[in-house]
Length: 256
Image (tube, rainbow, N blue to C red; front, side, top):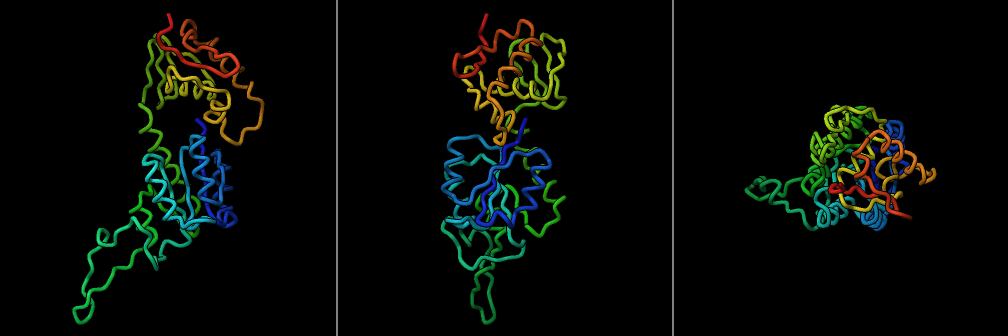
């Protein structure tokens, strides 16, 4: 399955090495400067991961994350910090200092407010991971992969079953009525999307986004070619994959 990442930051040139690394690893990355752009994209498309910089062009990263979590608590978020050791000089609403650390007494018994790092603040507001531009790229990639892996494993069972179809996510195999069939990676991903969305009409552009990624600029008809090949391997189970004229496809489990 193609992993689609939305990367939002005020200064994308600062993130050029991370963006290049993600592209080389086969991730599909879409970039944005403003929180308004990000919210619009998330409303229209499905992303597997959001990566957010310390600042966006129109909003602080912390404020953006607070607003995002108010609308979407499930999408994984990784924060990218200028430095892992920088501290806040102010606190956006929604983050309570009292819940992070008790105010310890200063000299003379006065109470002193604790220093809160950006890293802790992002975690407090719901980030799944925090990285820094100064961090080793290989370590950053390993941490990104770990977040994606946790997300994929929680979104889907190890084996997806539908009638006589068994799709095993860990071994990347497909069985029809107990017999294993040989499918390509794209055919496997297509079948996964179908099994994950029964009785839902899936347009060709949507299938391209989920299987080929947002950076694919070929013909939408490539979906038809791959679906036709997949059906030819499914035998009688191919009857579940229905064509929706002028739109795309729909998996109908109760087809006789």
